[in-house]
Image (cartoon, rainbow, N blue to C red; front, side, top):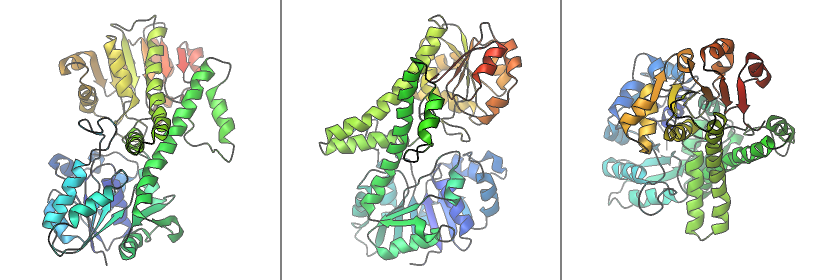
Length: 459
């Protein structure tokens, strides 16, 4: 099938960047991203591209180049579905918070709603591509819905998982390690492969069956998260010996069988995918009675939660076993640098723990807006919204955030934190002045020379 028009349902962290790059590399294809969220679509259409709803280095430039030419953002979902030959489903698939599989299984209600919407309005043959992170056999569910419409419209279902790292998503899209396409129809697979082939070498475009494609996504994230939990487990051992986790990570990372990536000891992993995908893997394994497999992968999550709690417990015990009424400045709220995404950010859970100990929290993040900080805390429902408002203050100036603080907790590895005038910061803080470096980005000797009581991970 020749593809002239693409529709992507979902204008989020996956749909937005992916479709922008596809539009840039395929100027003859019209790409329309649709979403029911009018505010989000308005932000994507804002004349000032610095106000896009997603911050990702390089994204604004590509949107500015393609928007209004062959890249469009709209709330007219039915119209875009009808006109396109290929439809990407790129909606949210959160972990279920209710019913069977609560806390582990992926909630597929948004995916199902998309499939039913496509089935209802499509009048011509379509290739439907699942782009969201989905559990194995989701394609089968989509296929069942689409093939029972009672019409003579033909639907081909493909799995095309994303392997993007937030903060480097545009580079990951422009120079992917691989593009994975799973499906049953060879012609449908090649229709999608031809779109990617406009910039991706053929040897990097992998064709598989749909089940292998779906499971590969979950497995890739599980393996990466496992590496983070592994080095974090060693970081705790390092703190009780004479070892330095940075030296250990460097030594094992030079082993060609292991490699250096994802071996940075820290406060723990966050983001929308790692925890969700591992929990999904655990749920699938348990549903087949594979309890040893499920227990193995669940331990990655348990260790990650332990690392976050260990960090906040260490902060409290170091501050003479009480943070009640004390100002704790948190530098960083996003789950990693170069993104404004805060989903499952360690900062949320550390702040929540400290607030339960009656601390006063001051937050500075260069890309996360104030309202997002409060909504993240309110979502936990640990305390009332009014209490969160009273105990948490957000700042647009880092030097104001740390003024009169008893301690600073570095929660995100933003590069700008390394360039601050730390002598100025020290002079503005309560004494003794503590730094708890959850990302190991500052120089311990330098901080100690200035006068800080400096604590890091795994040292």
